[in-house]
Structure formats: C-alpha cells, structure tokens
Image (tube, rainbow, N blue to C red; front, side):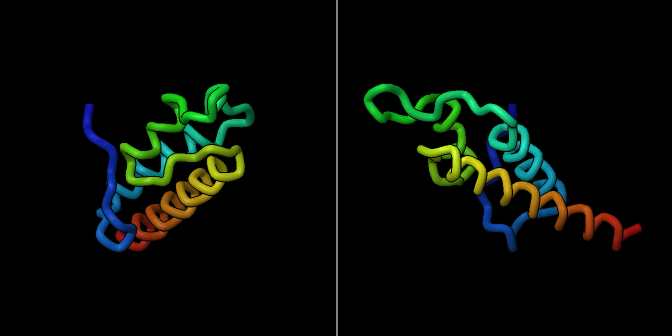
Length: 86
C-alpha cells in the first residue's frame, strides 16, 4: 500500500490530486460517518487516517466534511487538467 499524499496542492501531480481527492471523498464524504472521537474525546482510527494524508485530524462531522469538500476541489482540478491535456 502506498503512503498518503502529503504535498501542497501546488506541488501535486494530477495523479496525486486524483488519489488524495478520491480518498478524502471516500472517507469523509459518506452520508453516515463512523464515530470520529471516543468517549474520552480522543480521535479514533477513522479520524487519525487524515493525519497520514497531511490533513488536520477531524473531531467533528463539520471538520470531516471540510476535508471531503477539499477532496472534491482536488478532483475537479484534476478533471480540468485532464480535459485540457486531451
């Protein structure tokens, strides 16, 4: 398994944009998210995966949705670049 993309948006290749964007939407764009923090307020595994991808660890559903929205923007940027190349 390859590590998550942690580069800045301006430094990413189109393939890295696609990978990170699809990860963000897949993990945090679901209709029903799994619990992000445990009873003590510590982040759970699903939330901690964001750290491996260079994103802030979400503690609320709104924070997770912001990561998903960023993923959507990366995918849109990837599609624009791909369409321009064709």
